[in-house]
Image (cartoon, rainbow, N blue to C red; front, side, top):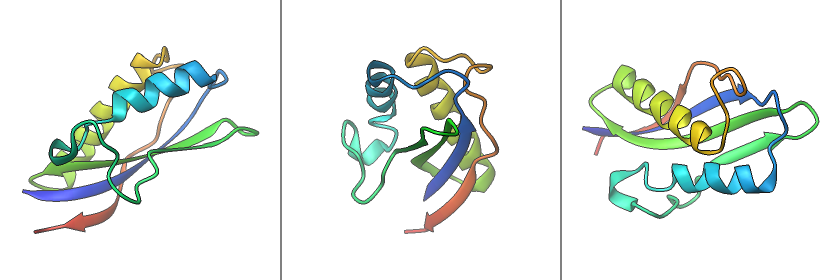
Length: 104
C-alpha cells in the first residue's frame, strides 16, 4: 500500500456558506486512516475561489495504485459534498489528479 495525495477540482453551482463549509471539512477529516480526526500536516483540504465558485479538495488516501487512489478520493469527495448539502449536480468535479506518492 502507498499513500497518495490527490487534488480534486470542481465548481460550486451554489455559494458555499460557512455552515456548509464546516460540514464539508468535518466530513473530510479522517480520510487518512493513520490520522483519523486530524488534518495531515501541510495539507490544506479545501481551497475556494469565491469569485468563480471553483474549488479544489486535497485528499490523502492509502491505496494499492493510482487508479484505486483516484476512486477513493472521488468517493470521499462525493461523500463530503453530500454531507455539506451538495448533490453531484450542485458541485460537479473533475478527475482527481495524483500530486504526491509516498511508497513507504
